[in-house]
Image (cartoon, rainbow, N blue to C red; front, side, top):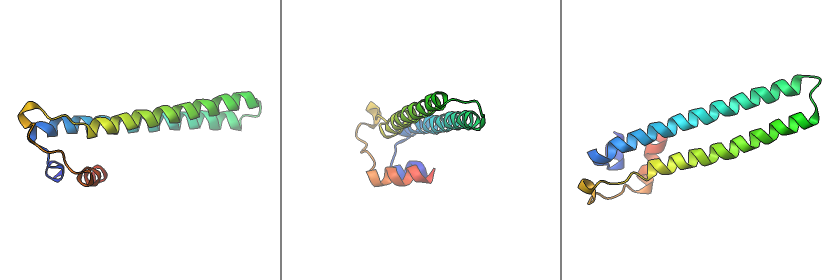
Length: 107
């Protein structure tokens, strides 16, 4: 299905799937990190003895995590889109961006 939709040769499909799974794992990990930080922030906020400085430090940590997560996911997306053709499939054409976008959302 996906292979045909993206017009990927057999030699391209294996690396594509590996990178797609890495992208999914990266998304999952960054979401879990974000949830952990939000829980910690909620715990700090609900305590009566938390200083504004502590909350500010946790908010800064969350901002840094979001920035890092966005870059990490962006790099993983680029790796999926940047499946390099082997010399055996050098004549294969790269799928259109519409095909990439349609397949990306169908997973």
